Image 1: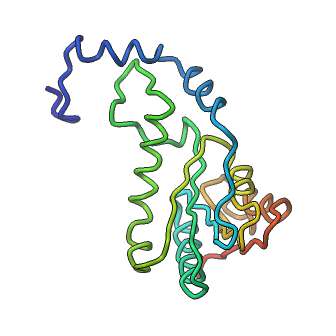
Image 2: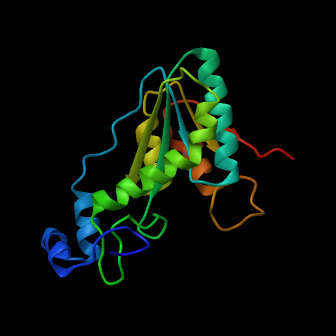
Amino acid sequence: MDADTGMNDSAAEREPRAQAATGDAADVHAEAAAQPPQEPGPRAGIVVGHDGSADADRSLAVALDLAAGLSVPVTIVRAWSIDTAPRPANWEFGYVSSYSDYEAAVRSRLTADTRAAVAAHPGLDVEYRVALGAPAKTLIEVSRGSRMLVVGSRGRGGLAGMLLGSVSEQCVRHADCPVLVVRPRV
């Protein structure tokens, strides 16, 4: 039994997992490519991007407050890549987990990261979406037809001195709904 995971580590128990996937990162990308495009969120709802950053927490708080005041649902979206995804529960050295394992790990992290903010708005209808892909493209697809898209002015990207991040800038330019860019409190 593995002390870290609480799972048995016998070869017989690893065998079904080895048969299910070849353990190649290309398999994860192939499975992701086979997923259908992101469906838009609720038409009357608010979509908010959350990458785990402090700016994303602020954006989420604003989106939840707006949704509560308007009595509309909220869709919290996290785009991810293999590089940004947390390790799935079944991860082990030399084995590449499946797309669904990574997706579940990202969804679990998103839920944990946003739990306190969502709990402060009981009764609000909240949906969680995770998607392997570029953040701007994912947010634009999910927000299609929504009442509003809410994003932070800066996320986890590189140039901290920029006033507007590339994801928020692309969303402002290409989303077909109003976009609220939430600046950090100074």
